[in-house]
Image (cartoon, rainbow, N blue to C red; front, side, top):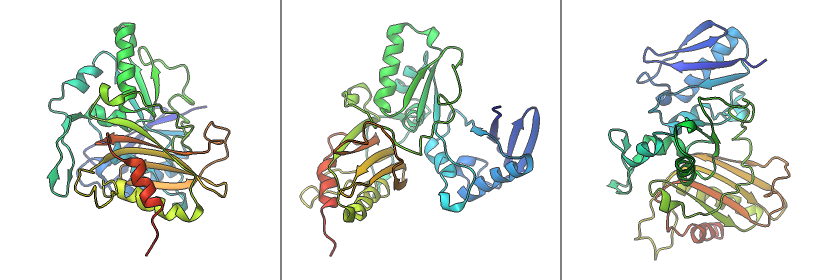
Length: 326
């Protein structure tokens, strides 16, 4: 029997689990009363302590506020298996109000997110709202209150969401009713594999210039090029820079990547998958599957973020991949 637990963090620095009407509390020392900004190990340890007190849970549902930044929260639970944690990040679900979401995306006010500063320079660009931020990090988007809009309006909403995040599964609901939990909101396994990465280019930038989804098809790599792949990923995720040639060095190559998923093929038959949230990423062996990418002759990288348009991603990737160490 499913026993989803609701876990919340309040400004009094405590975690509370409600299970079958019983409440169990664990105190957690955080910097500013927000679990999103707390130390990773402390947050995970506090939750594991709760599990020890009441026994293991089937699921832990972490419900954040409407202004939370998923990019800060996800790494809290994205724990390396080597640490032996019993908690893992299954996926991020974003709930959308079909009636008001376009207003939130189009008319940013106090919830506008300023552009990140790189090298001391503020790169101006289209305004990004909290709604943009939460949609861009989602593995699943639930568009609720669909009964309050027309079919035409709902289609516009769906297209706009897909423009911001081309990887997320989109579900449409009324009054919050879902047909089932498993595979819909739970058991997503979004960080176990990357699926087929079946994202097509549909001129997303014309629908929403703030955040876009782009895909890059890359050739089969040699085993010894894995290190160069790591170098390229560290540059675009850690440094927020696209490695360019000296000729292009003067051009604006600043990036702001929120999510990255990739399937990379190697000449020895190995397949690696890459998962990234902001600057945190990992490269792992792909599970055995029968997805459409399994028999592909090319790898694929999908990026979701800002300042991605009209950038020479493939050229940059190939330059770094083929570079020789000195």
